Amino acid sequence: MAVQPRPARVEDVHALALGMPHVTVERGPKGNAVYQVGRKSFVFFRTPRPDATDPETGERHPDVIVFWVESEADKLALVQDRSTPFFTTAHFDGHLSVLVRASRLGELGRDELAEIVQDAWLARASPRRRDAWLAEHPPG
View: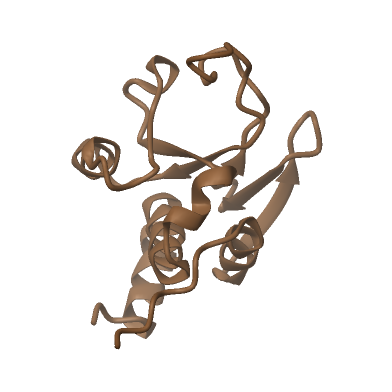
């Protein structure tokens, strides 16, 4: 019998982002965590905005997390795959990031989330830091 991966949780986002090298945490206007590498955010917890709402009630989603991606192709691969909880909004057109609601993180396994966080960090880290990390963590 195959072992099911542990579902991802919000605490995992924080732990995984903090586990990457050279990370600092800034706080947004509402105290929301913004994880940065070299003063560039790579994961952040977004405050409720009018572009991300419940289609039935119109209520703003209070739990949106933003993850940077390497390319538009990576973004499209995630948001167009209906088996993932990732999405985007018109506000993020042309922005190399994807969104996910914290309430849907459990649709991802913890290992899959780790890959998303690592990819977000790699997308924003300097070439020197990226190369050093990749040398220590060769793709398997």
